[in-house]
Amino acid sequence: MGTELRGNKASRHTVIGDGAGGSVRSRGRSRAGRHPETPAVTPAFHADPLAHDTGSLARVGTAALSPTLIDLRAQDSAQSLTLLVRAAASALSDVVRSAFDCVAIVPRPHQPLLSAGTSDPALHVIGDDQDGGNTPTSQALAGNPAVITNGYSPHPQWPDHWRLLEEAGFRSMLCVPLVLEPDRFGALTLLSGRDDVFTPGVVAAVMAFGKRAASSYALAEELRTAQSCADQLQSALKSRTTIDVACGVIMAQNRCSYEDAFQILARASSHRNLKVRIVAEAIVENLPGGLPTTHFGR
Image 1 (cartoon, rainbow, N blue to C red):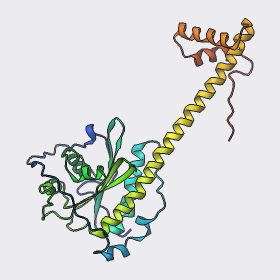
Image 2: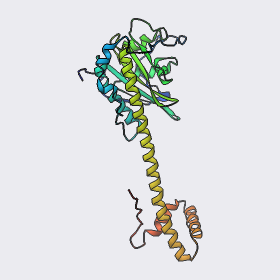
Image 3: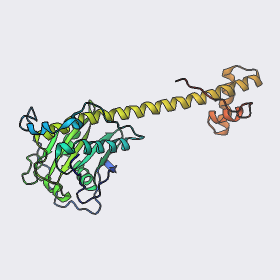
Image 4: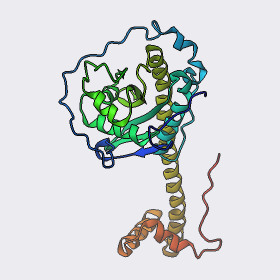
């Protein structure tokens, strides 16, 4: 890629964070000297982010702006988010053209925010940033991009935010929203130890990548949900087959209807404090051929 990513005094690896309230706390790090929040000021962005930075467009390349979805399929959301962070670090390295760290956070229903990042310092910054209320991260989680271009010129919306960055070894910060659903946003944050890294052209490229990454992550979530439903349905159908065979045995033994046979099976389940399926398996496992096999067509 031509750019070596750095961990800002931390080893290069992907770290998962899942702290209470979505924050990631620093180990032994004090945040003394935090300043009160300042009144919200709407950040000013040019209608065409590339208008004043045409050079960035030429070096964006296909990796960042490709419409192709990213393969984020994994066993759980944490692994998919880790893949998203790695993809961002790889695809955007030629765009940023400076060493940077990357953090992604996504909301989960009735659970803390899930986060993944390329270094501990970057995760600490985003963890503390989430605690602040009106912060760049909260802006992105609300669906709005936020940029701190350098560490020597205080941003009017976050005049003291540079202190938090400086403590972690960063000087520039870019947060863009990840649109997972119409009213559900995650955040993708890039952090650099240099000033003026996130030019308007870089912002446009990162936002374009964020749209693709968000769609890819949402699709991975949908696939996991669909697979889980399919597994549950398959398990239910397998259980139903065993129960039906057990009811057939009871019908033959008692010369009763299916409904009466199932009631007998249900009463046995209740008396033994066992699931109906387990009682049914005990009935049919001694039959010739053992437990029945459920076949699913493809």
